[in-house]
Length: 285
Ligand code: GLY
Image (cartoon, rainbow, N blue to C red; front, side):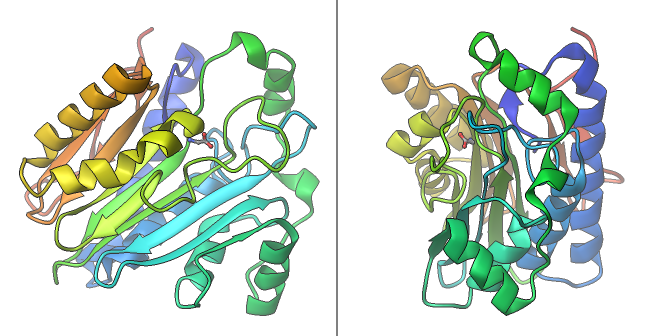
């Protein structure tokens, strides 16, 4: 998905296209025998490199005027997580999260995360290269604008392994040092082979307080993925008037998504389908 928020009409085609290309990239990995983890990384790298989306290059700016990125990767077999927060100089934070996944540490932030990137050979970049003019303009008017978006992906591979990943520049108007839901296991990302893999998107503080991704995945034990997302979003709105969305692949392979915002571009692909399709956003206002 490319984020749940009020995507302006002029940006909708780009969101549809970004989600579709990501689903295709993830699907190619799975079709060629790759793992769910590899598929999630492939999908998210494409979305991080897409300047239309709020992840990697093109991310929203913090109040101080620069990019601070959060990302996480989680695998469902052994509940392993690699997560990074407030990273200013890494083009593909999902690759940094993947490098951390086998390590003891779960979450690295700021300068420590950048040092880890250099030690691991994960490419770094000048921080200014991640800033796009659209976000400089948006920062000026952020108080009047929409909530937040994020990119995320979930996958189930042929061996029944689940993975979930998310990557974001956070929400407009955030102060430097703020970490949102995206890199926090249970909030923005959750994968457990016994129930499902889920990613959340939207206003990070509300998602953190609600543990939206884990709640949704756990609901997948008793409900279809579609019902699990619907119930989770209903509860999210009832308790917190939560703004955002969630995407779930349950361990039985069922897919679901739900959102309380006006749009959330989701691209889906499964073995029973001929080609990926996009849901949750039309190009019309
Ligand atoms: N959901 C992205 C953020 O609030 O950081």
